[in-house]
Amino acid sequence: MNAPVIDVKGLVKKFGDKTVVDKFDIVVPKGAIYGFLGPNGSGKTTTIRMMCGLLTPDEGDGTCLGYDILRESDHIKEHVGYMTQKFSLYADLTIRENLDFMGRMYRITDRRRRVDEALENLGLADRSHQLSGELSGGWKQRLALAACLLHDPALLLLDEPTAGVDPKARRDFWDEIRRLADAGVTVLVSTHYMDEAIQCDNIAYIAYGEKLIDGPAKAIPEMVGLETWRVEGPDLAKLSAELDGKPGIDQVARFGSALHISGTDGDALQKAAKPFMADTRYQWTKQPAGLEEVFIHLMAGSTDNFSGQKAG
Image 1 (cartoon, rainbow, N blue to C red):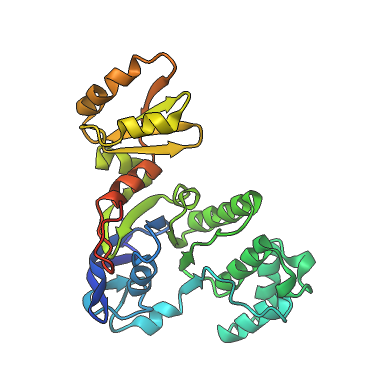
Image 2 (cartoon, one colour):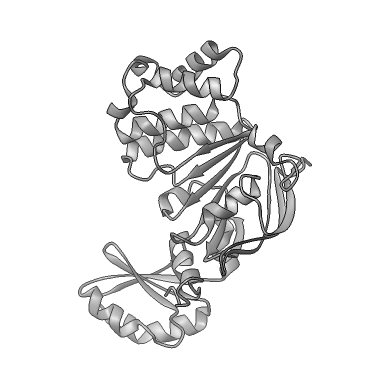
């Protein structure tokens, strides 16, 4: 068995009198695409930065890429590629000039060859002389990823990487990330978008500094124990109001043209729903709970560590 790429315990980070990350533990295997899912301001990015030695925790310890996150953070940084949510390269430089600049920053000796390879691998060769500021969101995303990969990092950090790009660009991006993971690169993704989360092998749900659950993405709904009924029919807003708050029904959520009715006690859920199932205008279908239902369920019981209010 390969040693984990990341193994941290008890990470705590405070800003002033607020605890942003509270006693966080995780083990991340090599080559995994690990998603960190939670609402904005929940501490996802802060947690990832501590795990990778980019931010010093107030408490806790562990290793990343075999290095101690407290004493050997400089060694970790040499092997990490970090793609921020906001495009941070130079708008008045061309694609090639930006990559060449990043190559100098990484002190890459065979810089020209590596830049050429990055341009080719990310489909940027034909646009290499285009100014970065003129690129669409999808092409900026490719350039940012190419810059992150120039030094062949073993660990890639992605902060909401596909926000604001079109569906095809998003699909192409994730195809590339999957290829990297298959080659042994470990990928950490901070997101609150479901279409990013479902691309991940493993998911850690984080709410306001606390890890609520983590595990294989496909196993998360079963770990929570959530059961769901899908309901289609007329006047769903009225039906939703009638179902909401009934004993056994933990949540009612609208998904397009259907309601998803969920609860952790399957028998109580069905008992509460049974009177409504007699209405032949509605079609009730039992289905496995998805990540989004789980996310809503977990957030509903979480307390914002800044406002002190329940999220749901």
